[in-house]
Image 1 (cartoon, rainbow, N blue to C red):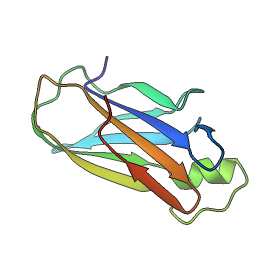
Image 2 (spheres, one colour):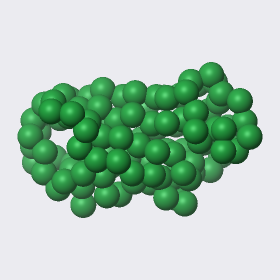
Image 3 (cartoon, one colour):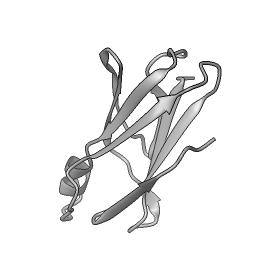
Image 4 (spheres, rainbow, N blue to C red):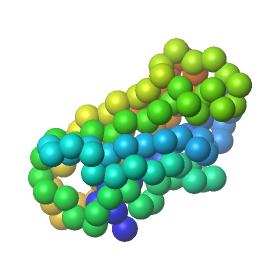
Length: 107
């Protein structure tokens, strides 16, 4: 399993957000790209181990909403986080709606 995983839920529809492009970046630039699966998850995003440091997940929410024919306010969501424990798994869920979002450190 990847050191960092994510899960996107479309809170407005009450279901997983399939087809959201996601980019994982680190101190030296882009690490991996993926697209959320039918369950809204990206279980394989980058390597199994990453060094301690600052990382970023960028979600192309504009493309997701455009594909479903819905207007949205945020064309992308960028989540910066600190990977402080090289041995811990980092799961970063995103709860999404056309005009708002929230995120947290999951398990």
